[in-house]
Length: 328
Image (cartoon, rainbow, N blue to C red; front, side, top):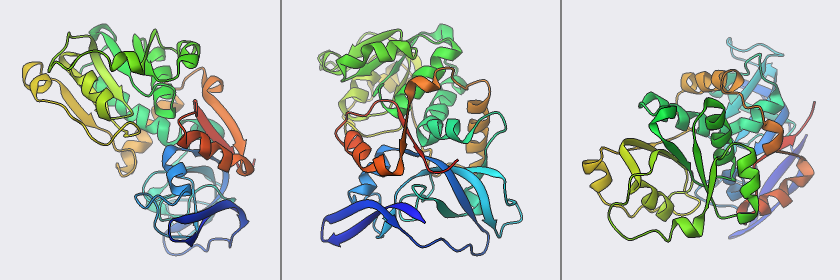
């Protein structure tokens, strides 16, 4: 079968590209998926350059998201021909991922694709969409309503940010987007942002421990100083979700937003969260949270274009979501 394979050829030296790879063999309580679509994520790009925090086993197939049909099954839960998807867990990390014609996974990782959404659409969401949905769900379940005030979305042109903006807009929220890409301001407004703040301007604000209350909620995808500044500006009883570290894994903050304004900072893990929680999120994304502008944020590529697209992701030049077409 054809697959995008990363090989370790020397210490800290890796070679990645399309290769013929052995077909996976189905063992106890596993399924083999005939892949129709996958997607690209920042974690995939890190895996492609041998980042040890993501992948340590080589040769290795990248791809933390996959959709397709059950080709072979030793599980009583799934039948051949069912439409399924997998996101997260160890897929594409130290277990071979979805950038291949076939992939083998434990049945416990597998969710069914809802009838109201296609394989391609669900991969447009992928891990990024799942992360955005889980983040929005935390805002809503913690009492952040449309009338509560503005929602700040950081890393807005990325996959999680773009999808979060699109869903929040559909739900009627007023959205302030932060981006380092001035030339993408119109794109962000087109997908639902009401205002765009440039990253450099946002970070100029102040070194004070607290700032004026501006945002009812924050969906942060980048971490670091941007999240630290955002926390200082959240309204009383507001909520921030945190799901990424593309700016930094460090968070230099203070306790005042939490003890004086009752601000809540909630971590989002879309990798290891329970399958039942993922399935509920997929059902929402396939129905009332299904966004109307999917075509605006989607870039469809082939297996052969993965390597060049990884370079865009790693250099911070990627915009929207990248869906990999494997087979119809």
